[in-house]
Image (cartoon, rainbow, N blue to C red):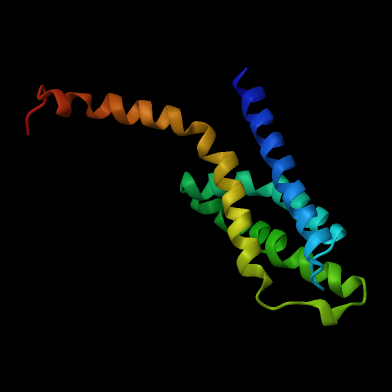
Length: 138
């Protein structure tokens, strides 16, 4: 049941984020922001951000090179490849990665850390309950 809850949470928040990206692509008419690049970068984020943030959060140091590559590809590599392959190198915006990285990490936190936050808070309360009641002395 818990897996379905996290799965539903991820899909609902992904749909909201994707709708926001598509709205922006269609409304703001920026030269480097269109529907295909939004779909491609969103798909890369959906596939990797949860795992990347989880690997960092759990301090899985051996996974960090893979996490760094997946982050780079999702945030900048896929964007650059799209515009180069479509023949529009002039549309590359050098500072685009900053916004994309923030959105990528936000998605990873929403999908990886927030669903487990109630469990973490309950564990913290259990560990600190003795201190609050005065039962445990220094």
